[in-house]
Image (cartoon, rainbow, N blue to C red; front, side, top):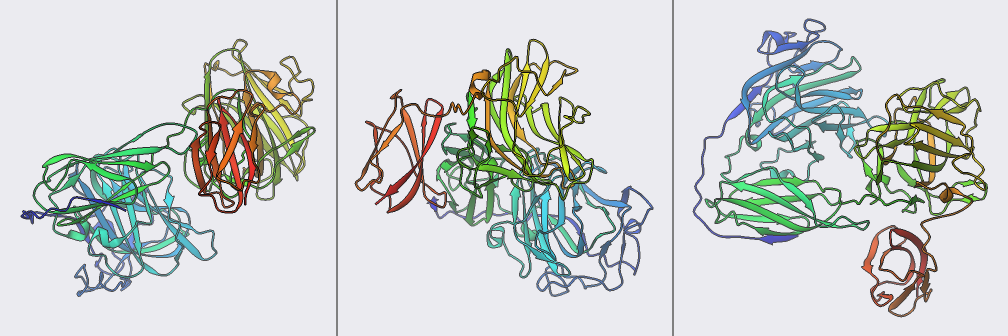
Length: 626
């Protein structure tokens, strides 16, 4: 943890903090929210939201006349049906932060959002979600500025009262953090500790209401003690105000890079502060002495989200998400999925996650199709979840090909005759251009191919679970023709080989620059293992067992290594980068080869995986250190 600045200055503070909204829902038993200052905006008059009879929630330190709310534990909101949604408006907030809190007790938690911030009607600014956990009988809370939530890793109990506190930055970026507490009322944001979820994106720069939503009769919950302020639980405001941060990659390479975060501030120079960051080093303008400026945090490790904590005469927590400093992969491109088993594919340097949900993960072992034997590991996915995207050199002419192995390992969760597309060629902006489908037929499935999101263009062959299939898909820019070759003969494959399936896009594709793996839904996407992705403009790269990522003439010696020097050479003798990982996948060395060697003094005895990169080609070797 890095620290800077601690100066003693005279504190000049203001007590002009304000309450935005307060409601304890202590209406007449069974009364409707719409009779008490709330307005219906969807499904008005249908299964109207009401309060119960003495169903107020109890949370020591927050509820009750001796608690934070200072209100009797009377009645509370009941969200227990499908129907009317309501909101209560207030004077629009157009800058700064909004902190809102409430008590919630979930009886049943069908996935969906149930409360949050809005502007008018369904123009939502921030939403709170609940869903059943993968652990039976448990739930997760989530938050997002869109209809897709980021959920807590922590499991929570049904029929238990929790205090939820949310911080929302009123900007188009809309940074948000959510804390879920089972006991205690944190007096400051710093005391609250790390939030359950923090993220940003798709925010609203104007907030003028709070809403309740009745999504489902099976989403049954009670809410009480709603409070909304411009400071944490109505604490005295801090003159120091942090603006929206910007993040910039220091480099964009296949290795883990570093990034710099810049946080503008105003209201400085009036108090004494101590600044801490969980990663990187703080520099820039000093808010102890400068009225405004930029706090700069540099040297932050890519993929590492950080927290800037300001304490002293203010208690401020700023959560900053890491940008992705990932390169565009050059053609020809080969992906053997040689990553640590259990890793999220989207966190690897050649891939990125484009939404939220369950990860596509690395699984042990490889697939084999004829003489083509996979190397490294493979990727696996099923049902609904994250889509993973990998960019490659933008291609606008000739013919582009993408080949890969896959097998469907489990169809049991898929509804009969349901289809899904799971492998997609995209343009650089991730717009879908060519899609490979599966469709369940009884206990088997068919493979389809189309430029559209649905298709009747299916191969008639019925395939079984665990059949390994090799597919090459290609697009001819000149002829505006998509081809799919299913289980081609790799000893003779060329552009004249008759395709199994063809498709002519209604609108010619002008550019291809990405490949995506997609998880649609439990009832559509079977369990799939995916391996050995190759993308190239030359059919010769798909012949036999040709692997264009092999570094010609690569040698690594001595192995086992007992000294402190490991040597490398290759036919090209070009610049090399070496990454070394221990048996649990932790990177222990990331360095350039100098004078054909690297220093291994700090490696403990044991087994390691070495990844060598030269001229865009990669190879891996096992290394034993004695």
